[in-house]
Image 1 (cartoon, rainbow, N blue to C red):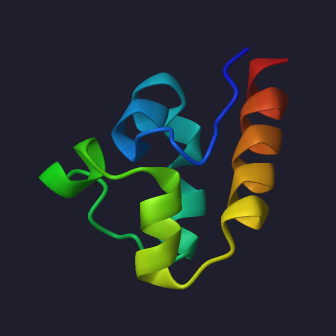
Image 2: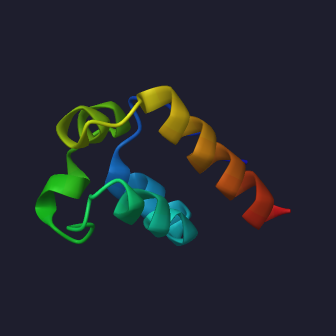
Length: 69
């Protein structure tokens, strides 16, 4: 199972768990296919969009765990 951390690149998450896209869309990160997502960490995305990093990490890891089971 993949564990997402604050240093994980958003684009890498979408590569291994495309089902995580709605979580990013919900925080206002609408350009998931843009080059920025290939270089931006979860922590950076949260800072830009004013989201609590730990809350998003919890949501992403729970979502991925549920989908992989």
